[in-house]
Amino acid sequence: MKKLTLFSIFLAAVVIILGAYTRLTDAGLGCPDWPGCYGNLTVPLSEEKVAQANAAYPERPVEAFKAWNEMIHRYFAGTLGVCVLAIAVIALRQRDKGTPVKLPLLLLGLIIFQAALGMWTVTLNLLPVVVMGHLLGGFSVLSCLFILYLRLRRHQAANTDALQYEEHPFSGPRATAFQSSVKFFAFVGLGVLVTQIALGGWTSANYAALACTELPVCESGWQGRIDFKGAFSVPNADNYEFGAHDYGERVTMHIVHRLGAVITFLYLLALGVRVLVSNFATQKQKYVSVVMLIALCMQVALGVSNVVFMLPLAVAVLHNAVAAVLLLALLNLIFTVATVLQRNAVYKKEGEKDSSVGIATPSPPSTPFNPAGAFSTHANSPGPISGSSASHILPRAPGGFHG
Image (cartoon, rainbow, N blue to C red):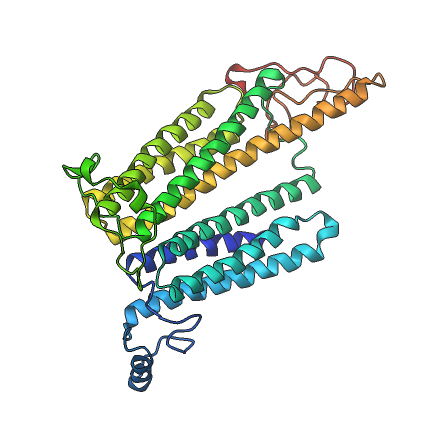
């Protein structure tokens, strides 16, 4: 199941990238029906089928390039749906073994809702709310698959005792307070990042990515064009392809997205740096923070490049892909913090239980366990789980970690 989940993560990332490519090549209505294409399972190519398709949809003649973009996206999305269904079935069959069940079932529900959004994207002629929801749904599926994979990996490691000596931060109130504060601020950062992704989706769905082509804000006179009410409303239109908002409303969308990018960058930068410089963060948390900061800087650079180089297709697609990487990195940081807090709580509970019967129980080791199988302390020191009442506190190295 873990391998299938990992494969599904790859598929979900491909679906997000293909969705961005489809949207950016104006192929969202490349096939005017759903789930097929002009009534076929593939793009009509023969002269006879093309003539039949054009007769059935005279307002939308066949454009093979756009139709293939749309159908390839649907093929990958359908394959992802089958994989998620298989994950849900396996989870139900293995629920007695401690395999997560609620998350796979939630994923199955998300996939079904995503399919409905894909259908409404076509049948409602690219209604911006639906297009943005479809984008957020794709990111939600990817996020849930990633969390499921982390949980399965932790579950497998726990069953093989691989987590018994996994790295711990320093024990004590200060370390716990640090981990708790990082968890809180990381969750706030998750809300900030998801809001920014939604703003990007709204900007793209309304074809406002090039409403402003100058830095740092927009062309001169932008202050007089601001219209928040109109920018975040849905005007009446028969077709929303190429946008239905006026220029001032698109300028407002673009500027709000830029402002959100600045807020997101500063917030996640502060969060990542705080983890990196802390002596109470684990080495894994520092590594995840480095990945998050690299993705953050790349995302800003890609956003600026979209403006400077007038939305190159490759850069715009990569902008979506790096947003997904940034989201997964932040989720990984939250997961590692939650794992540490949960493990420390277990140690504390066991310590209180054993102390009530007069048994000295060691607190979590303050130094990481190296792969060779020994803590970096004197060879005659008692083991961390020996149960001995002798001294078991390990020395704290500068920075909190040994080799």
